[in-house]
Amino acid sequence: MALPDSGLPPLTVADFREHTYLNCTPDTPLRNKLDIFSQQLPLTIRELRDLPTDSTLAMVAECFIKKGCFMPFYPNFDLSDMKHIRRVWPRLQRYSFGLVDSSGRLLGVATNADAVDFQDVRSDAAESQKHPFIVQIQEYLGSLRQRVKDRLPDENKLERGVLLDMYMYGIPFNVLTPSENLYVMYRLVEETHRRAVEHGFQHCVSENSHPYTQILALFFGCDRLIMDHPHDFVNSKGEKSFDLVPEKITVAVDLRTYF
Image (cartoon, rainbow, N blue to C red; front, side):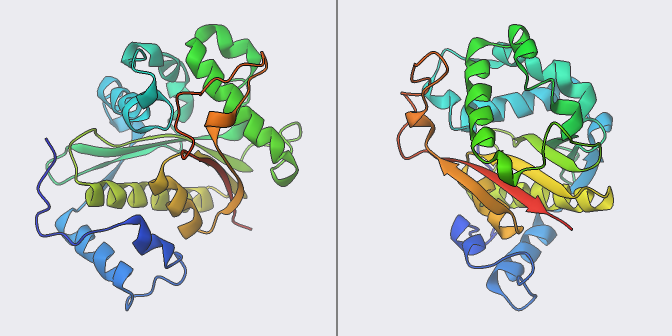
């Protein structure tokens, strides 16, 4: 059951559309709202390695299944089909984290990795370890990156510490209000960019299919490299992999350059 609003002001995508992170000054309505949320919903950062693996992993997987743009339209897919996340979990430790509330309850997880460590995860060699539908999703996302490859760092020459890959983010299902969900996601994305700068990354790349992450990418200064409709995707076998996904659903590839 969702939490009550607790007197918090409504926070919407429209609030972030009117500002960027750099011009969100203390006198703006958005900053005032964010300050109220920070006071009434205080969140503490916890490193991924300090969070319980099973429940944290399950939160990320459940969010992907129930809130992502693909899985809600394919009801036969469940948590047991997300085993591939566990295999890459060790690679996510260094740059990933969670947010807990004052009671210690986990309200958000951000998993990130150096893109060098993820090149083989996205390769054909790893397909036998994944559910066929996950393979289709990764083929689609790979096709998007291929279409904008001239604007991304060359993966064949990629060095460690250059590109941070925002992997999977999770918020508990049916626990928070929409405004609280957006605030938690804001904090996750904010901390990810802060860590990217702290560790000296030149770029950060993400594939965003939810309106919250799409608007936050622009808010934090990302360049939108492409916006696409997965419904129209035709895979390497000439099949429409996502014909059940509504035509209005979009997926974006976003890139932020720090210096």
